[in-house]
Each structure stands twice: as structure tokens, then as C-alpha cells.
Amino acid sequence: TELVGRDKGWQGKKVLISAGPTQEAIDPVRYISNYSSGKMGISLAEACYMLGADVSLVLGPTALKPKFSGIKCIPVLSAYEMEQACHQEFLDADLTIMAAAVADYRPWQIAPEKIKKKEEEWVIHLEKTNDILASLGKQKKSNQYVVGFALETENEEAHALEKLQNKHLDAIVLNSLKVPGAGFGTSTNQVQVYSAKGERHLLSLKSKSQIAEELVDLLQKWI
Ligand code: CTP
Ligand code: CA
Image (cartoon, rainbow, N blue to C red; front, side):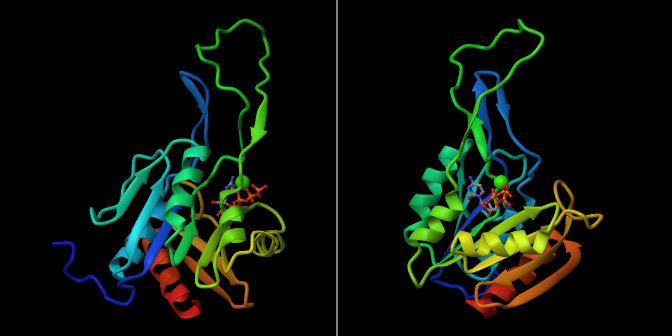
């Protein structure tokens, strides 16, 4: 069974992981979303589960799912639903990893009926979503460890370090979009990890499940 081979290193530890994209409804038949597959976050959930942790996975809409039924999976659609679920699970979480690609903006109103095509152009009015990670970072207690992800296309390191500080995180994982084979929809990734204490570590290009295992190993040392 899936219990066989499970480590005891993180037994009794509660881990919250968010993964996947969010969908922001425009009308009953349309939404705004992004290319996230959820693979990195799901792999992290599996790696933490294998260390014996109690894992809650808040998962946006994706075809993928974790391979262990012992992982508590909470499916959500919108950024708002993800926010509610994350705040709930955060209460007793020792470690939180926000790997989800949360929409930064959503339509400011959801049309109750399908919007019909009329004009040649259509402008959709968007409003900002709440930054879930920033709000968790702000309210975290000293015994809670919070990890964010950063997706950048320029000034990667400076922007990641800014997010680490501004969101009051303990560590941040910088995705390398520019490395061939890394990023959205791929099965491999390369990341750079920074901690608030000034530690840093490069995980060079390998499968997302391998990255997840090594990242969790690293966090075990840093926490
Ligand atoms: N995040 C979040 N809630 C949001 C937006 C982002 O919790 N509304 C989290 C993501 O899960 C990720 C981290 O914030 O862990 C950084 O996401 P990223 O998109 O790289 O940065 P943003 O702060 O959204 O800034 P920008 O997109 O402008 O770079
Ligand atoms: Ca963003």
C-alpha cells in the first residue's frame, strides 16, 4: 500500500501546498486563466507526503492529480476560492508552499448571461485579486515557515529577493523561464532557491519530481 516506504521525518508536521492555475469567470461560458499545469506543486505535495507529513493540497483546475490518496486534496476554481481554502488550511500548517499560479486580475463583474458578440472590439474590465501569499506571510507565527514561488522574465534575482522581503517569506523559489526545458507544461525544471536568512541554492535542470524531492530536502535543512 502507499504507506509502505513512507518516511517518518516529517510525521506530525502539517504541510499546506497550493498548485495549479486559477480560473476567473467572465460569463457562464468563458474565463481567464494561465498555462500552469500544477505539476510542480503536485510533485511537492507527493514529496512531503513521502516524508510522512500531513499534506493539504489546494489545487486549481488541472487534469493532473496527486498519486497518493492520503494527500488531502481541496479542489478550487477561482483565486477567491483558493484564498478561502488556503487561509483555512494555514491555521495549523507548519510549512506552507504557494506553488499555484494565482490570477493577478479577475473580471470586476461576472456577467449572469453569456455575453453576445456585437461590436468589433471588446474591453474587459479587470480588478486585482488579493495576494494570498502576502497575506499568509503577514499573519504567520514564528513557528510557521512560508515559501513562495517567483516567475520572472527579467531581473530575475532582484525581483525574487524583493518578493521574499515584501511578502515576509522564509524562502522563495525562482523559476527559470529562460532555461530550455524549464517552466510551464514541461516535465523538467531548474530553480534557484533563496532564504530570508541569506541561504541560496541552485537546483539544476531535472524532472519536476526530482526538483521537488531536492527542494523538500533543502527545506528540511533550512527550517
Ligand atoms: N501569489 C498569491 N496570490 C496572488 C498572486 C500571487 O499567493 N494573487 C503567489 C504565487 O503563488 C507565488 C508568489 O505569489 O508563490 C509570486 O507570484 P508571482 O506571479 O511570481 O508574483 P506576483 O507577486 O503576483 O507579482 P508579478 O506577477 O507582478 O510578478
Ligand atoms: Ca502574478
